[in-house]
Amino acid sequence: MQLWVSMEEVEEGTLRVYVEPIGEEKVLVWSLSNSVQPGWQLGRAPLYNVTTGFYQVVLEGVLGVNQLDVLKVDDIMMFYGPCSLWPKEATPGAGATTTTTSLPPISTTTQEPLGEYDCDFENMFQPFCKWQMSEENGTVPWRWQVGPPQSLSPGPSVDHTYGTATGHYLYVESKWADPMASAQLSVGPLESFQCLRFWYYMFGERTPQLVATTSINGDVYSPEFFKEGSQGDAWHPAKMTLHINGGNYYATIIAQWNESSQGIIAVDDLRVHPGYCPYDHTDPASLHDFENNGSDFDVVDGGIVDWDTMNTGEQVDHTLGTMKGYMARVELSEYNVDDIGQLISPVYKNYGKTYKCLHFYYYLSGLSGGAQLSAYVRSTEDGSGVSINMYKTLIFQQKISQGEMWVNAEGHMKMTGNFQVIFEAKLLKERPPAVVMGIDDVFATTEDCRTASICDFEHDMCSWINSEEDTADWLLQRPGDGDAALGPPVDHSTNGADGHLLLMSGPLMPPEGGKALLWSPVLPATGSNGGCFQFYYNAAFLLDKGALTVCGSLSLSCLVCIRV
View 1 (spheres, rainbow, N blue to C red):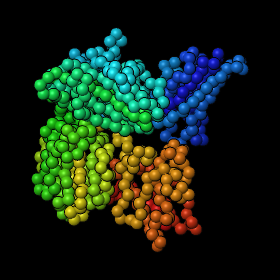
View 2: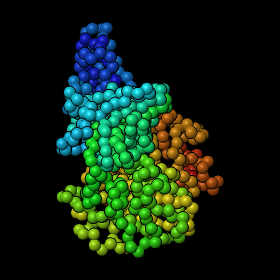
View 3: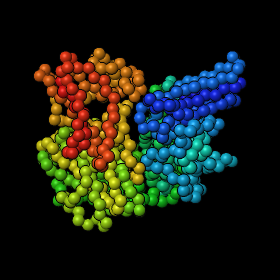
View 4: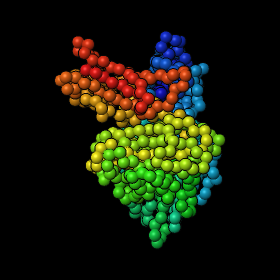
């Protein structure tokens, strides 16, 4: 939880934050006393590891004998993700934990030595190292920061270098109605091929754009890397090989926004080294982005659908966000029903770890139900026995068009030895028009999957899909979209009219009635202890003619269905 506190008019006083589980005593998780900082200051209180059930947050203000004391609180914000105690003067309660849980891709506190053009922003005497900020008109400076920024949108609670609230990073923030501007960082001059690597954080309602590119004499070239929109409350890696023929150049990182932007961009651990970017194709945790020899993915013999593992120039990839990037891609309009094609990774080495989640981005455009994308894993020591009918375990499946956009996906697994990943394209309809599949940015983590288990529908449908075998679809919308009388006035996540929810209503059904099926992603086996599926619903049925039902299915996973 994030909030803003003002105690400058308080001689003696304390603000406390409690978590109160339903039906239980409240537990203190954060307190701040007698702060002398002028104006408003940022506070962050970790709310996790107190209860696994429903709870309320309780704020308690305690003042001394001076009746003129004024304690102020404003802009309370709740969000998922890592959270460290802030400010430093705050005290954790008995129920709080200040250990930050890193979200994948995870940070590391084992740092390689800094090179000539590298910067982790930890040098107090030269915080920007050799990187320089632009001072041209229309640019604003990057801010050197330790701990959570004092910003409207939530920013990083920790840096990337150390993963703590005492490490440093750079950030910029855009707010509603701010004039169009940019913030630039450059280092050089450089020559020949260079590998640029850095970590970035992008979070907010309408996050500014982030660009990495090259420049000469202030003239910026076309982007080598491009991202826009919120990427979640976590640090993410970026890497790219830079090169300009016939001259010296500068590596340049740009954050840019317009009047409608609101959000934060932060960067940390900037590294520039000569040569191509290093890459270990056997490490499951490496980012397999198809930029180098297709990340050694190969097409499985015996299939008809032919994947291109080094596709570039036909559409924007996910890694770089430009037409220069590479991906695995296939166009399916020329194939027939039941034609399949498989793409298999190299053997990923276990290194004594247990990998629990496969992360990747996929692209599936065209006619919904025309083709199906599946992801599998197989245990193997040396990669032998590969065939189109090899034994493999399904961890992800999708056949609904996602439009012309990259979608984040996760698949639950438990791989304790060496393994391979298989992606399969299968035709469900005869020569479907304009159906395109793409795969990019594959990596595995030892942490459990997150997005497949939790979905608030604020950005998309996560990995939930509407069925093709029913009579109507669930609609992702705001409470006031369409006929507001058909649903609740607010959503549950934000308790506001601007939040999002899934809606199914009688007028969307045919006169004789029908059903709308909503399928979850593929979920892992729960074992003998079972599992818990939790959701919030708002349902009203005329004359009891309807039902909301939750079911399980071994063929896919779990479904929610309404019959009217």
